[in-house]
Image (cartoon, rainbow, N blue to C red; front, side, top):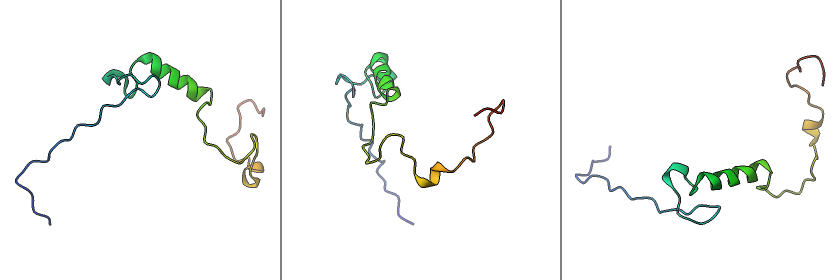
Length: 80
């Protein structure tokens, strides 16, 4: 096994990050944001699907594998 060093490990503080929404310093209570407002703005962007990964697929395109699969659980009330 490796020998243990007599010196304790040095803790390196993380770099201070800025809020990804407004650029102000991040607040510990709202990491990585500066406030609850900026956290809510970010959540709204996620819910509105503003953050996307670009693809070559058209919206609503189903792959051949997924098109015929209906292995999901039955829906209550018998409706689809």
